[in-house]
Image 1 (cartoon, rainbow, N blue to C red):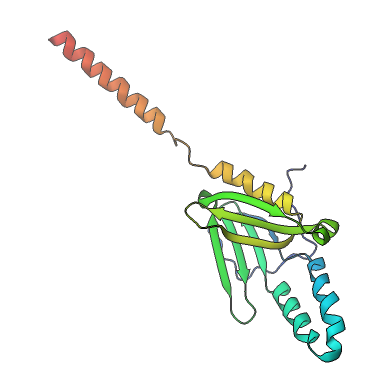
Image 2: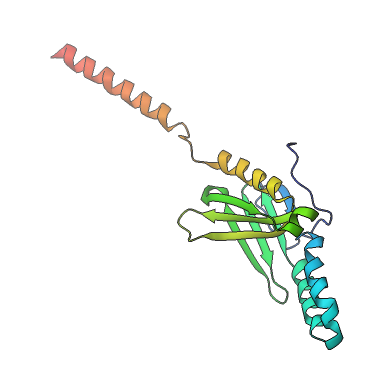
Length: 176
């Protein structure tokens, strides 16, 4: 496995995304284009009776208006055809990730990545039909681990305070 993030065939347009000055884009994608195959299989035959046309149009519009982004600060998901819904989850909130692939997804190389947060009930965010979902999950997990709260030098400060208290105690015992 390389350290390079997975890539998409069609890089999405990200004019909707506003990043902080120190935030770096790591990966972005739309759903995989082959995820439209099932809509075509159902929609084209039903187009004869005009039922398939809304299926095809709806699937295409959903495909073109969905973006997924991973930055070094967190995860973003944008959906919406007539309106825009943007969701963000910081890496410090991510509790668990998983991915799944259908038989068609395994063949064409796409699947879902589910993200659960601490305190949330179930899946908080789902990247649907993304290319190479195992690679995307690994990228997310790498950044979740690096965002886990460490001691941030607090242990060093506590050691210094303890050392100072011992010195004060020793001085008091020597005077007494």
